[in-house]
Image 1 (cartoon, helix red, strand yellow):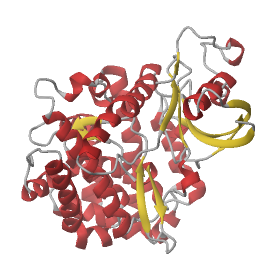
Image 2 (cartoon, rainbow, N blue to C red):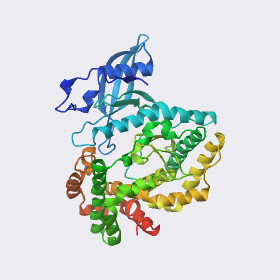
Image 3 (cartoon, rainbow, N blue to C red):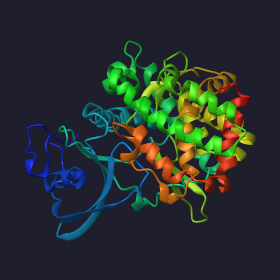
Image 4 (cartoon, rainbow, N blue to C red):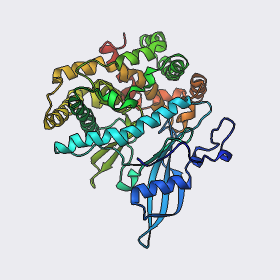
Length: 438
């Protein structure tokens, strides 16, 4: 792994009191770009210049700053260009504690440099393609200077699906297959380590948002409950959902403990999970006729060993409209199971669970997807101009910022939103029917 050590020079003129950079983009130095270029193109590549530009819209990412770096270089007497997507520590004074910022970079770097190569060995040995994720190029883990260079998938035609629309069957099945490949390859890998758990071999998997306590636990709870307050406001504007609103108000302060219980490991449902699989962390490539041909899973910064049901319910409840989910849910789970079985058998392992057990596990983990949906889905009901930025969600006092946002953007126009029924209310109705909301 190409990496700048903690002893390297850090320009203190770029920082404010406390050592935080005034602008996270200034963390991308010429030395970083040169190191990334050489790691990618070889020692003969000579950096000429580089520029940065926006590559995501407000609301697309929360935990990090993401930018595109366009590099001009010379190699073998020719002028060439290459672009990278760079994830940067946001260095927000009112954001997540620095140990959390450092943790998510540490987790993602270990995924790309250590875990993914092992998973790819399992997959390719069984005749399958490698994990669908951007190619890792370079990283720096100096505190307050963390960054990761990844290939720019835009050059290959990848783009995000419209976040305001629920994904259709073709997109969903691609995601289900890729989640199954990720999960199954990790399961096969674990069977080849009989004396060692994955979390013992890859120590960052032991680090998790839900392994915290005290002030950090309260900060996460405030972030979630601030979003849940938005949902309650919407439901009371709509009317007829008093039972749901009351249930949210009575349980939201315990959501951290509920989620922590949902990710507790219980055999046989123990696989490497993405942890944050929904529309914003997926990119698709399309055929000439517009059909989706390939998906890439992004942001492996909260990966954990847990039940596959947590990934499946998180994705299905947050990225799929009810009019697609209801008639096709079993088909989606069957697609997932079939791919999981194919990878497992090719790896010489036995299936750890049956199709009926998977269906039950999905039902049992609905609460995981629901509690995040109660935060994510209300934002889809508002005008795109009211998109939340990371500074609104990841803050020392997120409830206050979310309340200010709510007062500006949760207007009566929400009642006219065509997505209100299929993306939001029907999901709540399904959760009542399933007994998750009671």
